[in-house]
Image 1 (cartoon, rainbow, N blue to C red):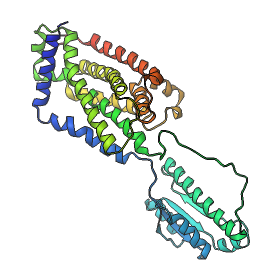
Image 2 (image 1 turned 180 degrees about the vertical axis):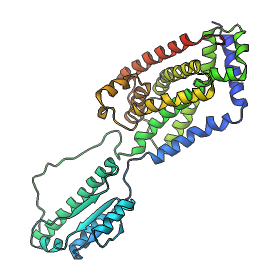
Image 3 (image 1 turned 45 degrees about the vertical axis):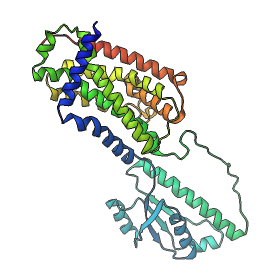
Image 4 (image 1 turned 90 degrees about the vertical axis):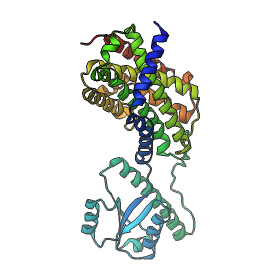
Amino acid sequence: MSWLRIREMVRKEFIQLFRDRRNRPVLILAPLIQILVFGYVVNYDIKDIRVALIDQSVSRESRLLADSFTAGRIFRITHLPADDRELEDLFLKGTVDLGIKIPPDFSSRIRRGETAAVQILADGGMSNMASVRIAYTTAVLDRLNAELIKELYGRELKYGRIDGRIRTWYNPNLDSQNFFVPGIVAFVVMLISLLLTSIAIIKERENGTIEQLIVTPLKPLELIIGKTIPYTLIAIGQMVLVMLFALHWFDVPLAGSIPALFFATCLFLLSTLGTGLFISTISKTQQQAMMTTFFFILPFFMLSGFVFPIANMPTVVQWLTYLNPLRYFLVIIRGIFLKGVGPTILWPQYAALAVLGIAVFAGAVGRFRKRLD
């Protein structure tokens, strides 16, 4: 194997890649746009709950209830419907997220020391969001209940509840961005490396330059290495760019080792570059290669635990996720960013990436033949 021939192949690939001006914004702007879109859009934090209030009591106690919700910045009373039908129309139109109905006897029952009912209606179109909204509502009602009992009886009454004091490690404020943005870094690395390498060989065929490569002294392995090194460097460069953006724009903490992160990235690129090269060897046109690439990207994304917990998937699907390199890379990158752990803790994920990467890349190299057919 001649490193001189590989060097010239890498040089040729960079010249060919950057000669087309259309590639430049894709290589630089696309990762930044993706991290901005995902960083702001993919967010499970509840910051604005639109509330429709039906106050049939119209009393001091009902006003206290309404004030308890609007005292914070999460709940916002946007509508005051007159009846249940109007409230239902608001839910159907998606105008409100939560409905609160205070019955006429709300105030009188409280003053008599009896239990007063309050009806809470939540839009369950997005079940996870509805669960969080109901939990916030319950917390507000519990706090108001304690205040009213103290006012009614002149002292604070305990209910024998467990005094649970929760402390959240690694992400104390439970910010969704701290969870999603490191995953976006991994997704960008996978997306770019797969897309670029999947058309690496096809582009030579369509441009009519594959014959020139065939007659060169380059061996198949040298050709593959020369083709993958530029895209490896580009993927790592984009990861650095996106990571700096995540640290300084979204203020995502980086508690772990940067060398450990780069080592994991190189192992991950073995799998993605190998998959891209495999797609390039079985495709006839760039359009076919692009369609096949997206066929791989969607399962990688869905079965990685990026959004949906793997533990919630069916058992058969959980077994399939072990073949997904993005699954292991997400565990590594989130562990390094948030927990500050390294290979001593994450060695099973490093080992899985190494095995998958070597197997996939070796398979792609074995599939490649330096000929026209």
